[in-house]
Image (tube, rainbow, N blue to C red):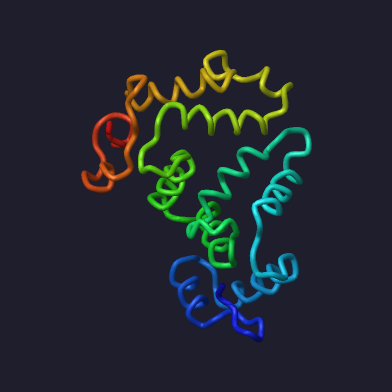
Length: 187
């Protein structure tokens, strides 16, 4: 979990986080103390995470999106976020490198975790995002994006995909991009 019996952050986890995030040792230790106050078990459950999201969207339903975000951050798939997963997620979403953000976005949209993204998966994520937009605000969206289906179609068209095509992450990494849609390949 990253803590010793005394409740201190282990040196190995601390060194890893200092190397892979923008945070200083002092900041990480302060974050860890706060994390343990809020989550004495040293882990955030999916339900706790959903509750945090709900507090930011009182007029909408962020549950489905929070579930997808949680899944994408739970890198060891144990159903909880430990401190390291939490801090890496915080860093990634606030100031991480572009490539890492793209990798995270891919993991978010790859709902079934099979290494590819289908149009149905795009629709599922877009639908969960729409659930967070108050109905009144949805009325102000452009005509070609005012439903989850239209928005997903627009994304799919941007990537130059046919209905049954899939987007694969591996091709982007191997080829370094190129082509329409930022280089994510047809699989």
